Amino acid sequence: MMRRIIEFIFYGNYFVGLLAVALSIELSTQLYLPYNSLLYYILIFCAPVMYYTYAYTAILHSDSPSNLRSEWYKAHKPLTRITQPLLLAICILCSLWMLGEYWQNILHLPAAYWLIIGGTGMASVLYYGLLPKSLIKINLRNTGWLKAFVIGFVWGAFVSLLPIIALHVEGKATYVNPVIVLALFIKNWMFCTVNAIMFDMKDYEDDSNRQLQTFAVTFGIHRTITFILIPLSVIGMLAMLGVTTYRHFGWLAIAINAIPFVLLLIASWSMHRQRNILYYLIVIDGIVLVKALCGIFAMHFVP
Image 1 (cartoon, rainbow, N blue to C red):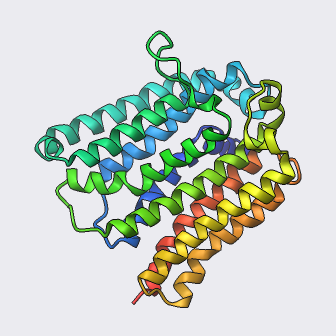
Image 2: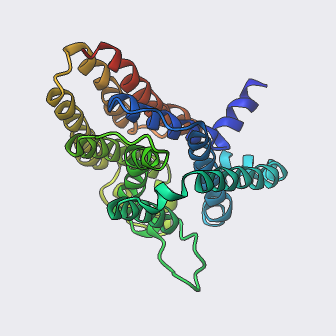
Image 3: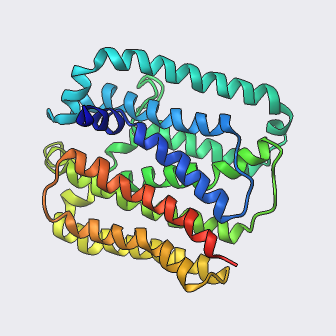
């Protein structure tokens, strides 16, 4: 029974929705911002769950070898036929309610905010080539080295920039230091990029057979860990140290914020051994949740 629950949460991508909410709450806590509305959190929970489920079942299943996750989707196909329309309906209802309630604020959003919204949305759509091929044939997932940075960018913007824009929409806007926001965005971008590269290493053989030049295929597992994963983790940690030092955090708050980056370095080194899919979904993605929780908890020790 417990295994079925675990598979439902992680194979069904519901843990990904939890990560989106947790990282967004972390941002608000770190910037001393009001929290977004419950409807916004429901929307950003449902949207990634629906997105990843659709992308995996409609796009990846056709060109990936059989694995435990594929078998789970085959066995639970009737379930996804119910949950996907339900998630879509929830997203539409939340969006329509926010549009009807805050349409004036939406119309008066700065041009830069629209650029962020458009860029993030377009990158997420093009990542799996979800638009009809008759309209546009770009599939950023097939861009080799670039694909991990693209998905890291989407996640970085989704949890570092969109919550601030949503606060403006909801009429809760307060001043935020753009330098700090940029540093937090870079930190999340690098963290999520490292996460995406580690997931690429799971697909090493499949990507190699399809001649998709990911970091793992191009450099090999060991060099990817040594020259890509570890340096990017360090860049993310330096961005975190820059923000915490600039804001005069104490040593305890800095140490708590450093925990997920240390775990990320350990996880990167663990990639020398081949792991099963649940290891990536629970442990590697779990570090992202640890990052959010540490970021929230550390603020209790900031004067």
